[in-house]
Each structure stands twice: as structure tokens, then as C-alpha cells.
Image 1 (cartoon, one colour):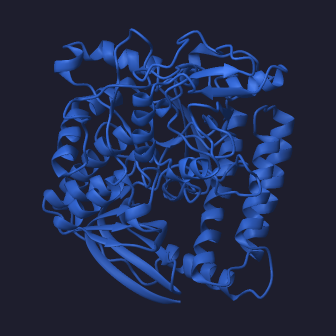
Image 2 (image 1 turned 135 degrees about the vertical axis):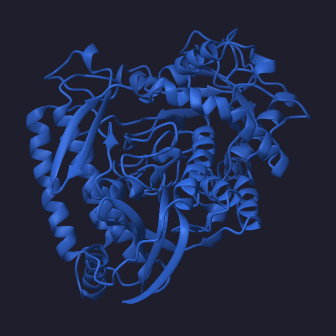
Length: 545
């Protein structure tokens, strides 16, 4: 394959909220910046279709006690996230500044010229999320990045980081529209490639991309960080969400309604009638409620918005447009489904891959010159914006005092990717990427899914390793786009194996990690569970937040 070389100070891998914010801030600090995105930055990442909630602490609204506000946040939207409280403090020292920046840039962070707090909150408790109009946030951030001289390269999938000794010196990837390897020489790298969406079966198994956060997210940053020796944490702790059935859409706090059963009885105890300030917090408190109702013979459950006023209906539809719901709402309008007449069935979405890259308050990973932000290391759009900004700033500072280290043409990771790409593109027959992805999803769901025990997982990891070996030896791609999909699957197979290893090592039941052979939660393990690759071996440890 042909090779293209690019040189820059700071490379941001992934053009989502975190990657663009990192690029913007690094460029403001005087760095030459490249943002490499495997899709198109205008429509990529979890925030590609918009968002309508942003976590922020505003002293004039909430008062001086930031600690109490963070505690409230931990009771609501942050309940499942295993990150340190120090990181949350860092986030919410900066979040309001970012909100004001976004508003200045053209993302309307207010409603009728005022800060509008609603959703994700218990009745009578402090409000933690402002409503904002995020439908065109990617266009605004892309414009701001280019205004500062950031070079955006679309349709490039970065596959591996490049090191010289212990230092990160750049990355290598493939173009997704032409047969070409891209080598980027950089003094610092910011990872922002997002979650891992296709590790487990989707809500509609026949349509594997049907995921609320976007089916193209395949944990690429986690995989390349691990291969380079960076620390990952808690991959065995999966996530689940709740939302409309078959249409995989997050943003349950956008809905103004009450979660009810078939007979019209509320499932929770938080609200008995629709309230646009709060929504129904049963969606936050117990995302398994629809599944549990079905298993107990009491299902299904519905989001019932039939009692809302005309004004509240217009309010809800406005925010749905900003949250990325138009495909669903347009379908409903076409088929005569009216929120004010028809309750909408809600469901618990399947497992999704968990875990994060370990990063500190400066967005620094355990490797010098490597930073991580967004869903890669912290989660949610507020954290993506804040830590993207922080990561970009620190990456630029690192680049300013670092010299470029030349990347040899014979670099082993470049050679390995070229060989892998040539083999996958050169085969005449074999399984395609989606076949292999389905085999992975089935194995993960069957053997390290809702219920996990040692013998089941040992059987499962042997299956997965067989699939992994076979994929590397037989997978085919008929064009460069399919090649990128194949590389995504190889990354997910890597993360799937690590999930098995960490699940076997966590000998307790905690959250969605359900081990009947270790049924109790161990309070001494209220820590980050860390894995890293040292040479060719895995090292696992526990780290206090």
C-alpha cells in the first residue's frame, strides 16, 4: 500500500466533542494541530446528532457548596460511573466556563435567554443539567477548530500509536476511501475515539449498528492505548441504558412523562404526573426496570406522555430535535403516533462495553505524551468538552517543550499494519467484517453477559481466542472502507478478550457484573481495576481513586 506522511505538534484522534475541543485549545496555545477522524467530523461521535443536556455547576444558581452539588450528581446521572471524585471536581471547576464559551461560539446554551435547568434530577432536589440546543454543535465546533488553523483529516482510521522507547511519537492508520497508509508524526497525541458499541448484541441483532451512541464506535482508542502499554480500567463493568423500544435512542430525560405499566400504574415513586422540570427519575434509578417487569410477568412498561399540555408537548419536541430524535419523531408523525394519545413502550437496552483509559485531572494517561478525553476516559458530553479542552491545553504544553522524533520507515507497527492490510485486502474469499463482528457479539453475550461464572467465562474466552485467530488469518475486505471495518473488529476482539480477563479477576458481584460464584460485593474493592500490557503479558492491579 502507498504511504502518506504528515507532521504536526498535536494529533487528536477522533473528531467528536472531545477531539474538537482538544484541537481548539491546543491551537489556541500555539500548536500545529491535526484532527484525524475515521468518518466526518461534522457528523461523528456520540454528539453527532445533537444533545440537549449539559452537566454544569453555576455558583449563582446552586450556591457556594460545590461538594453538595457533586454528591447530588453522584446520586443521579453518575451512579454507574467508576471515576474518582477528584476528576469530578476538576470537571465542574471548568464546566461553566465551557458553557459560556459554547454560547459565545453560537451553540445556544440558554432557553429563552435564561439558564434552563431540567431533567436528570429528583423532585425537590438540586438541578444538575442545563438544557441547551446542541443539534448543530458539531458544525459550530468544526468551524471554531478550522478558524484556529486546525487541520481536519476526514476518512482516516487511526489503528495504532507509534512509540520510540517510552515516548509516543505519533500514530499510523488507513484511509477509508483509498488504499493508503497514513503515518502522522506528532509530539503529543490526544485520544477521543469514544465508546465500544458493537461488543455485545444490539437491541435489534439483525441490525448491529442500532445503538444510541452510534454503531461506528468500536473502542479504537482503548485498543491502541492498551497495545502501547497504557492503563485501562474496569472493562468488565458493562453499561446499560433505557429508552424507546427498537429505536435505540438515549436522552430519556428529554421525555416529559411518567413510566407506567399496562394498567396505567406508575412504576416508580418519583412522579405521578408529567413534570417538565424532572421527567421520571425511575429511568435513572433503575435502568433495568422494563426488563425486570417483563421477567416478572408484569411488562411491558411505557413512557406515558398523554397528560402533557400543548405547551409542554412543544417544549419536549423542541428538545427532542436537539437530542437527535428526528428520525424517530418523523417516523411517528408519518404513522400517526401522537405522544399526547399513545404511550411509548420503553425497554432496557442490551449490554454495552464498559471501561475507560486511565487518565488524571490533566487528561494525562500513564504514557508520556498521550492524553485521553471524552467517553474514552471520563464519559458524558460535559466531561468530553471539559477534558477535551484540558487535554488539548496540556498536550500543547508538552509539545512546546518536546522535539519531533523521526519515525523510521521500518517501524515495526507500520510494517505490521501494512502487512495486515495487504493480507485482508488480498484474500479472494473468507468471512467479511460483519460476520466476524456478529460472532464476537454472540460470544460476549453468551459467555460474559448478564450472568458470569468462572467455568462459563473460561469456555467463552477459548471461543473468543479462536475467533480472533481466525479473523486475523481469514477476514477479507473488498475495498478500503471494509478494511477499516475489519480493523475495528480486530480492536473489539482485543477488548473482548480483556473484558473476559478482568471479569475473571473481579471475584465479586458489583453492579451489572453478576457472578453467582461470588455473589457478594466486596467493599475492599471500591477501587479502579486496572490492566496494562507489559511486553507481551497482562498485569492487573487495583488502584484507589
